[in-house]
Amino acid sequence: MGEHRATLAAVAARAGVSPSTASLAFSGSGPVADATRERVLAAARELGYAGPDPMARSLRRGRSGIVGAVVGERLLYAFRDPVAVALLDGIAEALSPSGTGLLLLSGDAQHGGPTTEQVSRMPVDAVVFATCGRDDDPLLDLFLSRGVPVVAVDGPDRPDVTLLDIDDYGGAAELARHVASLGHHRVAVAALPLRLDGRRGLVDDARRADIGFVDCRARLDGTEDVFGPVPVVEARSNVVEEGELAARLLLAAPQRPTAIIAQSDLLAVGVIRAAESLGLRVPDDLTVVGYDGIDTPWLGERVLTTVVQPITEKGRLTGRMVTELLEGEQPSNVHLPVQLRVGTTSAPPPA
Figure 1 (cartoon, rainbow, N blue to C red):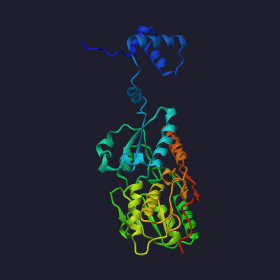
Figure 2 (cartoon, helix red, strand yellow):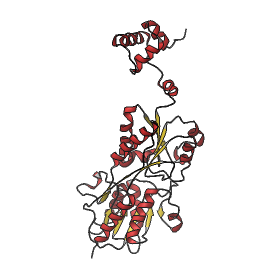
Figure 3 (cartoon, rainbow, N blue to C red):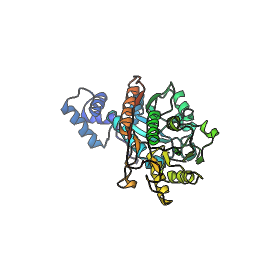
Figure 4 (tube, one colour):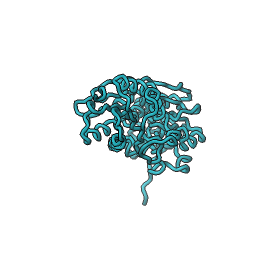
């Protein structure tokens, strides 16, 4: 004989109350006397009833209680990126009081990202493009076509999307002016992935015209508006090892750069590792600067010269913007400032 799952109606009958009163006793949202609530909970314990099905309750409210968070790269890389981890933590913290959970989704269709069919059936109340979605991201159009509200962090930048970004251009330009003020003229860039297609290496004019991410484009524009066109090597992903590979290409040039501007702190750490493995001293022989302001324990006592962005604040603000959308409000776009931090990895070029 099979086991019968206890129901709310059975609990109500055991406690001698109506099913609606039993439901209010579980939710804690209605005017139920303490003695009545305790009687309902005691009946539930006796019958082995754990409470109303949260999915069914969500569907009755027209909500799933789930917010999708699209991460631009493979989830493996996201968990290795302190910026992505801190951002997601801030979002989760802001959503927690509403009982909303995060569903992590890879934006990389080649490595586990959701299919069109999966997106069409995915029970999400809203979606956050957490790490720089492309302006032409097909996932974005799919969610918008379903009427799912979207908040984008650093992109995509489109009128039908609520945007939270930072002053990527201004931060990159200020960083470039700092490097220029030290006397550097031979400058190169170790760039973040320009698109999620697995490419790595020197960036030509065709690739420049095909940059898919707003932050990459803004950081490169800020640099080149100070120095003019500079050599750029694109990393395949935002990890230290990719910074090493980019640096080896840049430092193999016949006239090697005296400064390398990395578009992230993780890439900058990789640049420093590669330079020192080649016998170059940082900053005596090579200035290396980054972007983000994360902790860099790989560098020991040295402090990376970088642009500091408010990562955790971005996450919390994003979570609040999602909450406002779910409450039927339309939050305004947010543009956050950044700050140059001059450390010990930048100095005048060698004589």
